[in-house]
Length: 93
Image 1 (cartoon, rainbow, N blue to C red):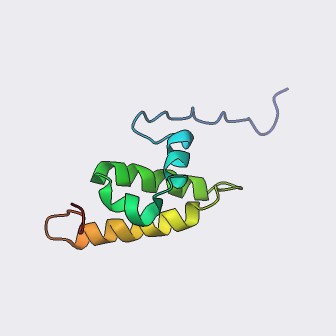
Image 2 (cartoon, helix red, strand yellow):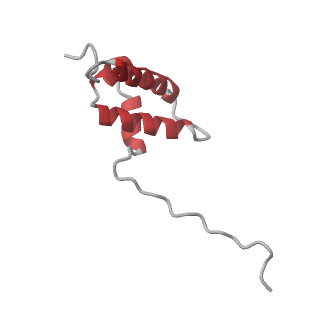
């Protein structure tokens, strides 16, 4: 006799080769220059990857120390860039 509720297997985890891994995320969070100095220097694609990685990290039971501040500052940087006519970061030499 079959159980009344069949177990549905979870979908396989998607591996996104463009996603940032946790060691790369920690590299940014622990960078001594800090988000104020580092975020404006990132290319748009890297900033997007960092934002995604930070968001995912914050959605865990124990996010990395400093991830919240990095996320908030990265959102601000992304907003600044989207408001710029050319999408470029301001103040970057």
